[in-house]
Picture (cartoon, one colour):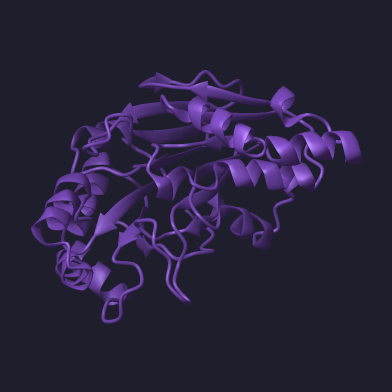
Length: 280
């Protein structure tokens, strides 16, 4: 399930939330990225927060990690007391330590006053790099992608004997990703519209500096389709959409931008979208 499909940290009335996804695979429940709104998204998806299991952070931009601490804290206040493992790039442990420090008064008070277990005892942060992540019963591996100026940014591949799902993370057009995702059932890839970049630059007034960042760090929709085609992906899901909530851009624009570059089915991400293996 795509919980948040918007590229970037800003939110607008009635618009989508920043990046987060839920993947149930191999008997495990995986949260991928924790942008603003992930906790509400999980609850509305019917997830019992006290059953939180695995969390994966692709990189430390705020629209991917801002609500990591609040998600775990909220799950803890609803009864979470079983182990949670957070996989994230270098710096994730410092984020978690800082969050705990910021909430120390509340956490210590609830432990003493309400008899809750100490979340510092059952939440483990594992900082990962490129390669296998070493999970038992579920094959997860990471590929460093190109998302300047961030250097610690990773695509993630989740594989069982009968299903493979790949998340591109934030990346510019990066051909090695096709090899990493080769033969996957679902490729969830970030995407951007060139006309949308022009509109965003116009609205924000940040000029060529913002344009340069977007073009150097993100993938235009036709290139996302090219990656899916080269990978032989069975389905392409466009996510982390730029723009995601500007008037004048809709599904037909995304489909037009990818037409002719990928022959398989293309799904345009929206908050709450659910895909199942049986539908592949």
